[in-house]
Image (cartoon, rainbow, N blue to C red; front, side):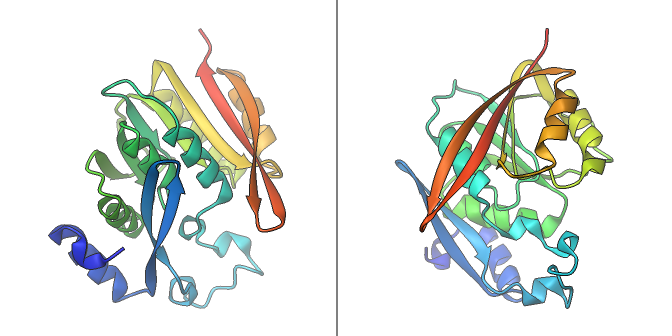
Length: 230
C-alpha cells in the first residue's frame, strides 16, 4: 500500500501519525475483499515506559489485530446485506470487522474511546478504498444519545467486568428491536461466560465455534449471535 495514493485528508492524518509512531500497512484478505490496515510496528513510544507484562491493563489492546477480529471480519465479509443496512462496531480498535462489513455493503460506524484510534481507522478505511464508514468517540460509561443500528458487532471487547452493564446499556439503546449483535472472542476468555449469562436476561444467545490456524497452532474463536427477546 503506497501512502501517496491516500486522499489528501487521510494523507495528512497518516503523516501526523508517522511523526509519532513507526507504522506500516497490514493487508488482510477475506475472500474477494482486501483490507489495508494501518498498524503500529513499534509499541515502545505508545507504552510510554509502562510494563504490560507486570500490569496487563496497561497494554493498548486496540493496536493488535486479534484473531477474533479476523474471524468476525471473515464472517461479515461473506454475508449479503440489504441495501442501507446500518452496522455499529464497538471497541473497534483496528476496525477489521467493521471495514469488512463496509466492503460487503453496510453503512458502518466505527467507535472507540480515543481520537488517535479513530485516526488509524480513518487511514485504514481510505487505504481500503471505503467511503461508507463513519467514525465516532464512544465512552460506554457516558454514551451520547445513540442512533439505532441493524447490526452491532464487537471482537475481544470483554476484558473487564465493570464494563459489562455499560456495554449492555449501549447495546440496548443502539440496537433496533429486530436487530442482531455479533460478538467474537477467544474461547478461553474467562469474562465471556459471565457476560453472556447477564445478556441472557434480554437476548437469545446462540454460539458457533470457528478455528483459525496460525502457524502450527489452532486458535478457537467463539462467535456469538444475540437477538432481543420479544
